[in-house]
Image (cartoon, rainbow, N blue to C red; front, top):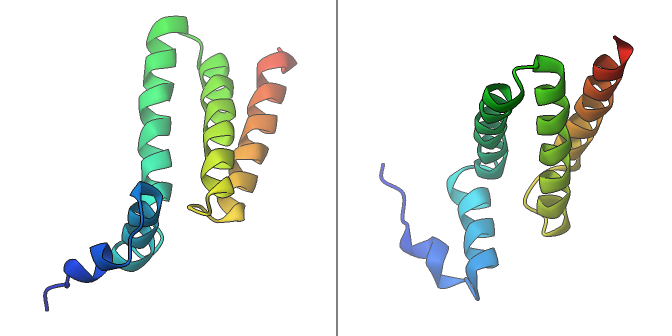
Length: 100
């Protein structure tokens, strides 16, 4: 059964409400989470090319994903658990970076 895409755009008042409708109604709340995962992969590989150090690349990626997910949380696009996961990942990666 095809999905009615016109129902998503009828209640929008701007770009934010359009993204919220697509995230919640069409993607079941997974769109921004998948965007963060994809962005994390791209950032990690670009940091690996630049620094050639896995620990520093992981720390930089997790910190940037944490700050980006905080912005998405402010506009209610991600669940708070996603922000908590990136915060814990940031803390662990920073501890790994400075442990040796």
